[in-house]
Structures are given as structure tokens and as C-alpha cells.
Length: 78
Image (cartoon, rainbow, N blue to C red; front, side):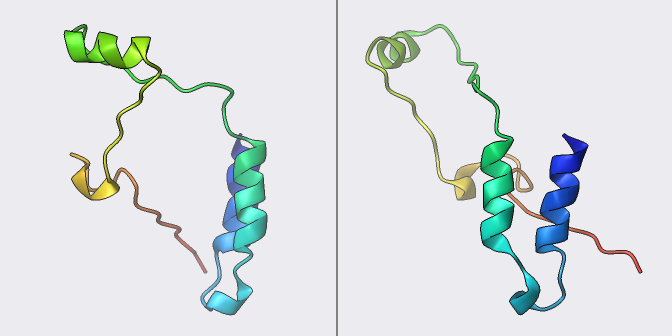
């Protein structure tokens, strides 16, 4: 997994936008994504309804309770 992160940093760590290889970084991300993801919910009527009907509720990143949950930060040392 660390190799994956290193490859993404190599693609994205440029001071000028012209050097960024976003398409390659996205390809690396999709090649290394997990086979499954889990969402833990309480056992209530709405959760069971969603499960029984193949619904997944998600909110906008602006509504997350952690302001850094969807932020991207790459540090470059010289």
C-alpha cells in the first residue's frame, strides 16, 4: 500500500498545475481500492429499510462532522 501512496504523491506533488498527472493518480487509486467497504449503522427501522431495499444514504462532504475527512494535503520537503 505504501508503494501506491508513493506513486500518487509522485503524480500530484508539483508546484505548478501543468506538472500534475491527475489521470495517472486516479488510475493508481482505482487499481488499489478495496474490494468492499463497510458502513456501520444503528439497528433501527430506517436502517433495516435501507438494507432491505439496497439503498445507501450518503451526505455531501460539506456536511461531514470532520472538516478534514475529505481534504487532500500533500507535503513537499526540500
